[in-house]
Image 1 (cartoon, helix red, strand yellow):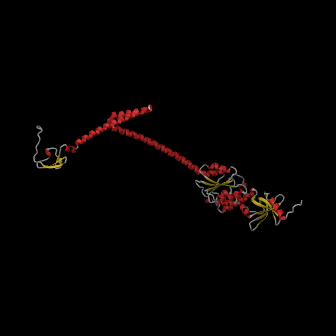
Image 2 (cartoon, rainbow, N blue to C red; image 1 turned 120 degrees about the vertical axis):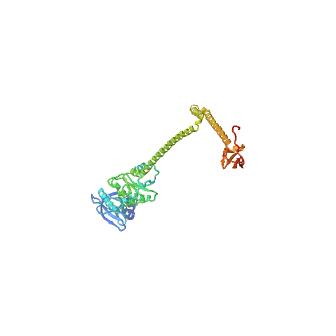
Image 3 (cartoon, helix red, strand yellow; image 1 turned 135 degrees about the vertical axis):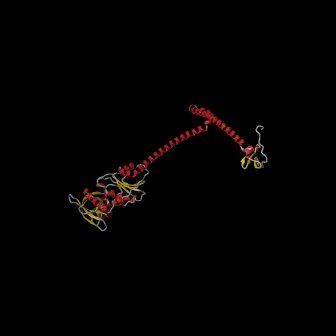
Length: 420
């Protein structure tokens, strides 16, 4: 069987197909660096042990993303894959991510970027926004893997929160792309506050949160931002740019729910106060009713003190009614009848007295006397009760039932009581 012959182009294409599967993370010291007008960066990485060299390329879009200046002599870690360029046959390493190697270098770059952003005023306290007092719509950026999200949700409380969560990697340089994309997405959501969080970790693992692009996004986010990134010794630049920085997701949850907890506690206190006040009102009302009953009883005693026997009978009836109610409900009707009988007797007596008084008033009414044939005589407007109240020749007005008679006194005869 004849062995297949490949063209150079075909063979390089086959090699590149296989090489794309060889994604790797390599470390070395940067050698010669060329930055093209397009923004793409061509550089070499050299092994410190045996001076082995590999050519590397990072495209402009990736280079700007990671915020690291590639310059000769620094040590970096690049993640990517090998590739052969057809026109030259040269093998190059295409870097997808780059990061500084060594904690000393990382901290040096950290301090450098911190000063740059600080000089721009990004970390100024005066620019910090107040976290909403009673937030309801919360945005979260974190990894759905691990205990961070569960820790936050278990501490946030049940206060009707609406939570929008965007899943993102939060460790390693590859997380930068995820975090920037997550911020872009959550900007479009209806939220009042954003929480960016992850668990603790080494200074190196937190490097995505020291990325310049991410820090600027946090500082310019349209709503207040809480960073719960969790590193006590070296606070990430994203946390410094946030409106509030806390060490753990559970503390972030407490910040958002504390005002709701206090409000709930106040409501419980108000509820207790209202119930207590209501009970006091009832007690006062009960006391007032009892006092009113005592006053009414006193008035009753004044009104019915002339009817002592009837009152005594009523008390006996009421006491009998009360005893009967406790001992035997069947006696209730009889006791009630006794009470009604006592009241009816009282009312009958009062009615008789009123009728007697009415009769006396009627009989003593002057109009009634006039109807019986009596008359009323006046002289000079004064009532004539005796012959001394008038004189011969005086006019006398005599009032009878249907009018007045005017007469003149012609003679006055004194009645002799002995012959009367």
